[in-house]
Amino acid sequence: MLNRIHTFHRYSVASLGVNIDHIANVRQARRTVEPDPVPMALLAELGGADGITVHLREDRRHIQDRDVDLLRQTVRSRLNLEMAATDGMIQIALRVKPDMVTLVPERREEVTTEGGLDVAGQLLQLKTMVQQLHNEGIPVSLFVDPDQQQLQACHDAGARWVELHTGAYAEAAWTHQPHELARLTEATAYSRSLGLRVNAGHGLTYQNVEPIAAIEGMEELNIGHTIVARALAVGLKEAVSEMRSLVQNPRREPLFASQN
Ligand code: PXP
Image 1: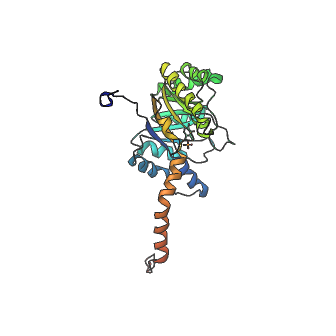
Image 2: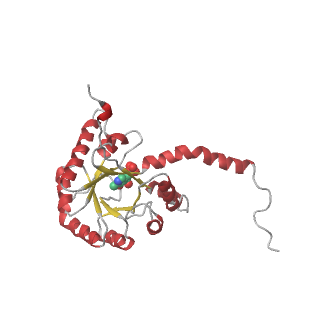
Image 3: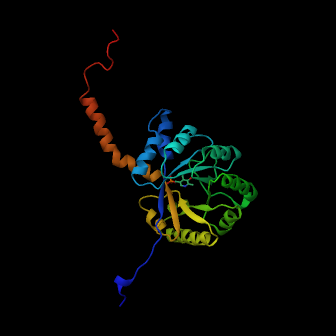
């Protein structure tokens, strides 16, 4: 019989990048100052985030330039700046100097990033951008579908990292999920055989994350929406109770002292 006591395995352990875009979404719904993603990033770090990710979209629908500038000054883990592969965004990244840039496809009408980058289809352009960022010491990750042709193109573009799009896995019916998981597992192994380091993300939840976190060689998962949703679920009761006590027991003295 196998002696379990003497059987040791060494597993790779993935780290967690927390995407805080949806905190900014709530603020932008009112164009006000709360919730502010900058102090929230500190709370995420206190909770154990290994990195903070923000997507500065060209339409600035959630994260603003001011957020990125302040986060650069305050994030003490790693700041991963997601952005479209355009010259304008590259100039911003060269000025801000995040710890990593993840290039993603962007379409104005989409609700969220819908597919991976077509790296093979814009190889020369991406190669130049990757080089510009690497020259300034900023590592570049390319967000792609788990597809060998795209992964080979990421290598050819000179990227050091890829982020595998987990959307198809997250959206698959449970009968099809093992197939999508196998694609991601194979893509991770293939990327690493090319010398690429591997992140993954999109659509991961408390229910579906574990098989992805357990993929051997997976370095970091970028997770946003489900964490912000969970924060509402675990925080709403306390938030309502604080407001209720103010409404039921208000201070009666005038808020502003008389000027005279
Ligand atoms: N990784 C990338 C490249 C993304 O574009 C997004 C969504 O902004 C995420 C990860 C996080 O996805 P989700 O919010 O679904 O966790």
